[in-house]
Image (tube, rainbow, N blue to C red; front, top):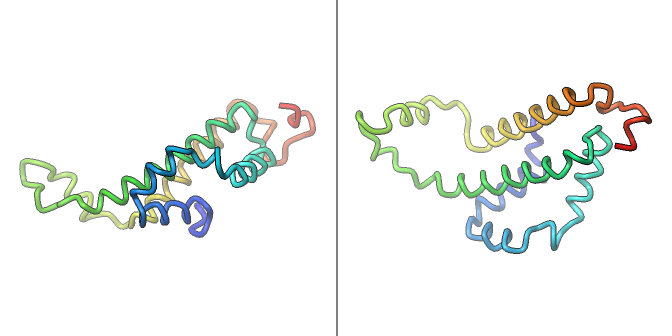
Amino acid sequence: MADPDGLDAVLRRALVAHPNAVALILQLHPRSFAPEPYDAMIDILDRNGVPPGLTLTVLDACDGLVFGWALHSAYAASVSLGRLTARRGQRLARLYEQSHHDDEARFEMACDALVQGFSAEISASSPRCGPQRPAACNGR
């Protein structure tokens, strides 16, 4: 499961608290003014067998999930379930009523799904180059 105190969760909570900051931050993407966390993440991905050709996709997906989820969370709170009627949005209203997870838990589940998806992609494309990869995989 995703680390609830990990960088992604901390960043998402800060962005949810300040949703107007998302557009400002993305105008000058964090990679341009704060590359250090990305370098650290690239090191982690490399140590765990993520091929360099997939690393940028992983970074993009993580950014998209964190920033997109933060925006969605900030504005989803304004959804008025009272406007849903028997003819419009009945199934959506039931989902909200039956959900056993809060926004934070759903975000963690989405992060886990993202990691599992990339893990499956890496395993399918290079089964011998996992976390304990042989020296032959270091040159990829």
